[in-house]
Length: 543
Image (tube, rainbow, N blue to C red):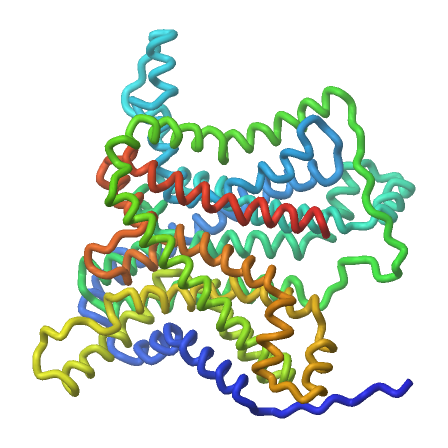
């Protein structure tokens, strides 16, 4: 039967909307590129001569350290739960994902409290064995401590993607390796690990992006990175040009990571293509090894989630009656409202861009969606600076053109509009991916049938497509909701004066030595973050 040739229009209202969304989302990058042609700020020479090398050194060491430790934790646990049968395996498949719900800055001050002189460990040692320490049991408020904290919160990125890769690998290849005389360790190193390399590098790249975005952990531990440098230039020195220069250097790190990930992946084939794959059968090791594997997974889970979570619950039990009041519920209302509005807008914009691609599947339209979703790779501090500068200029223009009074108030900069706009730029990819998966699942034929019956594109979208992908739409909103709820650096820069969210409140209280009181806001962030993690694990199990 002869295939029906489809004809597409290169331009319609949907491509116009997509192009407008792209221009809006690209605002931070455009701002940084334009402002780089300006002369550096007055504090640039001071930072370049005294602080810049330290920013480079700490940022690189932080990236390398977190990459190495997330590789060790993520790959080892992914291999164990994918290939071996041992007590608790099916529970560790989702328990080891839970640390993703723990923002790094919350994990940081929780561990400081655990190891402190008044923490549970030292109190137990003093009361039980009369063992005394001066100060903290272990000093983690340094670069190695930051590497540890960020690694135990980010290793699930590597665990999730690598576990999925191991589960999809063919048993036939491993059997061939055994027949050639290789033992299990050599098979893992020579066969399974190379085949999982794209997944491992993708997971490490995601973790590295989060490291570059982190402000709360490095600030609390006193580790100077480019993110803290941007805050120092913007808030302490009041030098926007220097903040732009530092943001541009930070973007170089991002593009290098993306480039290296793309280069190593290339067009290589890492999967069997002959259709004769057999799923990997789990191995039943000896009793001793079963206990060892359970112990490894349990230890990692205890360190990365259970122990700090118990500490938070303990603090909440001591302080909730002082903290949870009308103002606290207002804080929850504000945070949830911001997150919900941002999630809804991102999903709407994602639907517009994907529908434009559906109606005009040209390469240039596809490139629009790719560029529009790059914001997740850009650190929050960079986005905040790239948005604040043009918004300040826009407010000045409005004052000078429309108002004679300087007291008309801010329209864009320092308002919730700027904050939501920044969330859309930062988390567009988070909401876009589930919606894209929904469109791909239903295919294009239903849409074409509706169009052939003379129904307009807008009505087809509203009556046919959206009801079919409603689960994907809800998923996108939930994922964005959780990410917005725990976002810190972007919110700290762009929030209106004296405006608090759960994330900023928890961070401010912790930095002001009110760690126990900050646990109430932190606990809500973590419990909310667990929802999409469980959903994600269910999705992997189905696949």
